[in-house]
Image 1 (cartoon, each protein chain N blue to C red):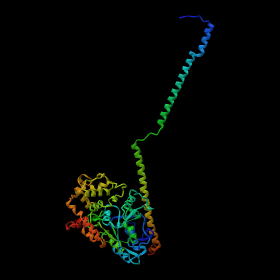
Image 2 (image 1 turned 180 degrees about the vertical axis):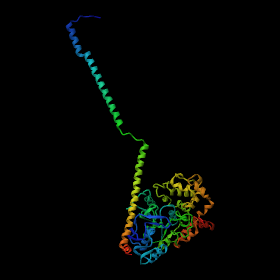
Image 3 (image 1 turned 135 degrees about the vertical axis):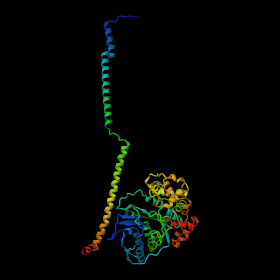
Image 4 (image 1 turned 180 degrees about the horizontal axis):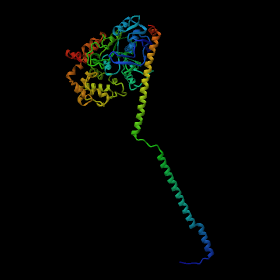
Length: 119
Length: 401
């Protein structure tokens, strides 16, 4: 191996040239610190998002079991059936009363009731 | 009672003595809902006596003393109402309707009317289709009258379909005919157009001679509904439309056998509920399945279990409606003791021998058929069914005693 003495000025110039092409250790340290900070920020954001998802999941209405749903449907159906039956029965009575009202009107027209009162 | 027609719409008003409650001719208590109904598919110029009889099939149960029609009836028709019911009918004027030459069939599509139609292949058929009443909420939409009308149309027979909501005039027990004869209201109003002299019903041995479904276990030679000399028979005859029962002398086993072997078997339907076929779950399907299984000599095929409401009455001891057919079925269906009819079979203890009379025709039924049509029906029955011996006929006459 051959050693040669290089003038200090030239050595400095070469070193400066090299240094201009490579990032300094200090800058590397800073970059790593920045990257680490970014990762930690992202982690915090992911944690926050996970919390939000869990919150949304929890906020959704609880799904009732099938049996409870069927029970509610049956109650609604029974209620509709009751209403339909009672409404129809009430209407029957209205229709029957109409027949009786006409019977009474016709009776009045024919004068039976007036005669009955006089008698 | 005052009855008036506007086109096909019948409106009736109660006289002071009339009531909302009454009894059908078979004694069943019934209740009126409303006083109007409409019959569609009829001509506008029928004989006044036809209008009167059609109206009477709807208003008879509510009428106590007299009926006033909106057009005069013949003295003969008024006489039939007076003799049969003690009802004074008027106004009276004009000649009675003379009977026509044609026998039509009141056709539902069930086994009995299919059997009647099979015996009389030339006869036109009249089908009454139930339609909703504009004043009554229809809570009986499971009654598929549309399906029955479609099947009737597929028979290829000369068909008259009349529509009617008259069954909704009945509030209790449920929509139905105020009198069984109301099924003929549309046929009556078409009688002039079809030149009718008779109307054939699918009422069979049980309904005509054995008391039918509502009054049980009684020989009924003077059946008020279906005997020709009964009040309804005389009333229809007065309007020139004789009541004819081509299957009046044979049981439902015979009508089932005739119907299943008929050209009309693909249109055969006794169930009022099914759409693509019989529903198999109603009481009528269960009863008819017993008869069909007996006729075909096979085990009962039904999804109905003894705990179902429709099977409940068969867990109790007799009497039953249509009991002769329950006996017939229980005696013939293999493995009956393990079915819903097991309890009934044990109570009845019927055998093939004890129910053989139900395979033949009761000869007296034939005598009731007007001469014009008796020959054809007699020839069919002689060839395909055969008549009861004297001993067998005695089984009919001692029924329930």
